[in-house]
Length: 149
Length: 149
Length: 77
Length: 77
Image (cartoon, rainbow over all chains, first blue to last red; front, side):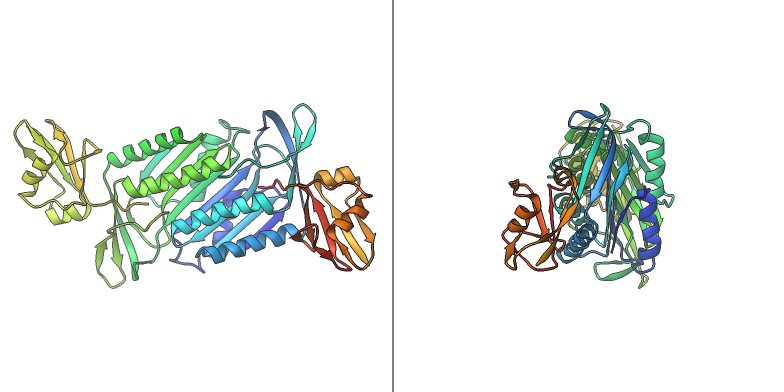
């Protein structure tokens, strides 16, 4: 299980591959039947306005702790092999990945359900805040997330 | 939208990256907010028995047509940007990817739901058949898939 | 009329061939095609059938030149 | 007792600071901490609160040395 929060831009597909090489391939040889992943990326529009940049703030310490908690809770709710969560903070531009959630399991039901549940938990409770820099020069805090279900 | 069936082993993360470079990055710049993916891989166990190999048969023509149909149906049920389906056929060994479904959309609900729906449709209707080579030397046809919901 | 028949997977192994060309009268259902192609075997209820690569029912009518396939429950993904 | 207070995001901007050290009597709730740290402002009902980086309610008791944070609805992912 790995939780990472970083200001560094990341390539989610390379991050997953690297994690598989280091933590999955040998440890779970022959056991993986399903990998469900979700990548959230920055759009250049929101609520009808053009967006050219984003500042992602978090609560250092609490954010990591909260993500660790939900990853552990997912592992009690479903039979999983491993979980990877990566979240950007700091300044982002459109098309950059914001969040990656990847879940490895033996069967697909568990991977699908845990991956989606983790994303909804993350979005509803993990202490991150987005401030958008609009193309009209104004900036604004995002007040709430779009519905996930 | 891309449907591919191949005897060639594939790296799903590289396949997704390549597809993004060729079909997503420019066409949907700033529009992608969510990518949901599912990878099914070959386990070395099934129904309590060790499995050392698999022969994946399909119905050439009908399989491609059926996958194309469900990808098009998904695009009418949800607002999606693009869909990629890749499925192995022929001889496989444990840990090799069998199937990849990736869905790009602006919002996560659509990507999650379409990705899972596509996998369940694929498993319940697309004409593929698995024959397992067991570690005890016997071989057997898989009679049914595990439940997805 | 002439109809092309295909068998897949375990059904192909049971039949001992991956298909056949069937000559049959002008009015025939999928079930009629099965009877002739299988040599009168009973068709298990879980067998799936298609005409020209689209799923169909066993009572659907077949036309000359059609490709009719019989196969067991699918297990891809 | 002494309690460390933190504000995040839009609340940090409204308060004009990212936190404060609050001196308060030995028996105090999160709501008491808010009143003192905010200079008596009303706390909007959608404000989230935590003690030592765990979510809590505004009536929860605070202990000396605690870290109490106030922040708006979260918008990550």
